[in-house]
Image (cartoon, rainbow, N blue to C red):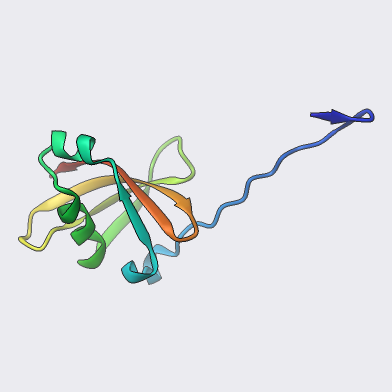
Length: 98
């Protein structure tokens, strides 16, 4: 957008979670339930991964998305794709059993 001959840039800043010091209770979670269920994963199983410890990897091409790899309570390993929507909101977009 230009204003009086100057170009104004809209800068969006978002805060990346410090995954090494992640506190699952400090976040709200949203789930793309239909996509998860299509891969045999219930919302509560996806949530368990955050409480049981996990490994976070940067998702290629998206600076606000991550691959989360961890275990549900029963020991089944999952890979989740998550979007950090705000400082305290994580949306689980999809996932797969490993």
